[in-house]
Amino acid sequence: MPQTITKGAKALVAEANSKITTIPVDEAMGFVGSDTHVIVDLRDHRELKRTGKIPGAFSCPRGMLEFWIDPESPYHKDIFNQDKTYVFYCASAWRSALATLAAQEMGLAPVAHIDGGFTAWEKAGGPVEEIS
Image (cartoon, rainbow, N blue to C red; front, top):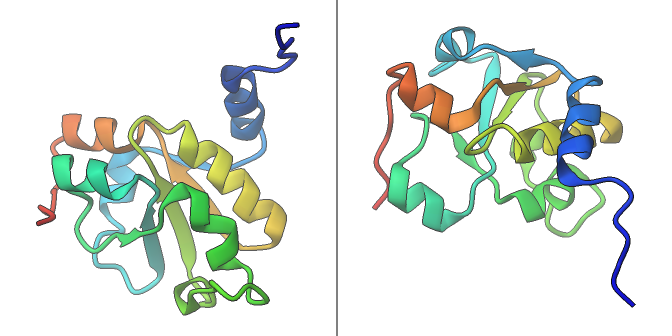
């Protein structure tokens, strides 16, 4: 018997967006090199190699986010234990919406994501750091 999906990805993203903070690209550009913000790239390494990333962004594959945030996890990363604002992004702001909601529900604060993701960043002429 085929599966009956009762809530699709678009609905999950819309629900997440109704509960989180979304910031415009031009505002996010001001966070590059900031001492008060951590920009987190959720895309996988292949995407980073293909397109580059926001300069100074911390790379955290989406599948590891909750484990890297949780201080009780053997995979915890200290970067998620700072008194800073965490700004997430992915390619189109779908994964980052879900990730921002998950981080927020875990207690990481403050958190936000970039409207339109890396695609919007590039379109707006944001700086890009190449990955080798």
